Image (cartoon, rainbow, N blue to C red; front, side, top):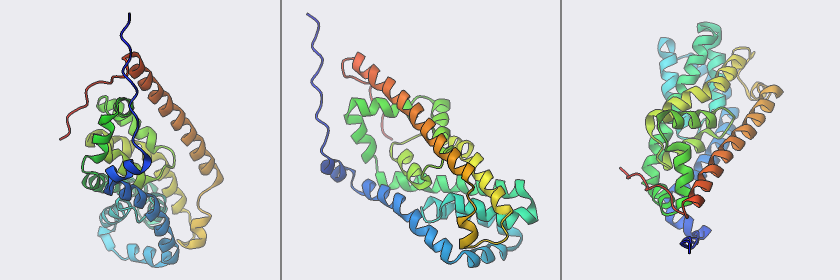
Length: 260
């Protein structure tokens, strides 16, 4: 007689999951909430922010990348806002390509800050929890644990639509995505929409609450939604195949990689 498959593990209850995640759960919640609060501050002090950046002198592009990147990584400054601001400040003076490069550079710095923060807060809790459940581990490894280029491609795919930047940073860091493909995928994936936002910012008559609200054209919103649907379908297909492999292996997944 064929060997019976092992019994299905009972998944932890929601409250048990939150307890075991500890600070990682709070970190994810803050990554969702803080950018929303940050946009209100930008609306309230938009003119002051623009004037401050413009007053930084010749070091303004470098300081902008560092300051806005850190703010985006700490989830207090939405990336689309800093991209529009970069276009508004640097586009007319340095040119749109330079403004776009500054905006993408700030996103790169922000992703590094968010990655370091996520790793420091999660402290392997998320990875250990995933490794206990073969299905979760199989999905994680299929997405961001199967080699440099595949991981970079998945990360880039996640970044193309308008997904929450801070939350994506935190989740990718918490599941311990390798840093090099994470950074490459982030820069490649986020570049198109960041450059588009910088171009839009370069044509604004002023950087204010009113112009920011009107700066996102309908075609960008539609493209972002379509892109998000496509990404979800692709990732869902990859996850489904990973789960099917676990089922064919009798509920077993590959051995978890060592946590460093």
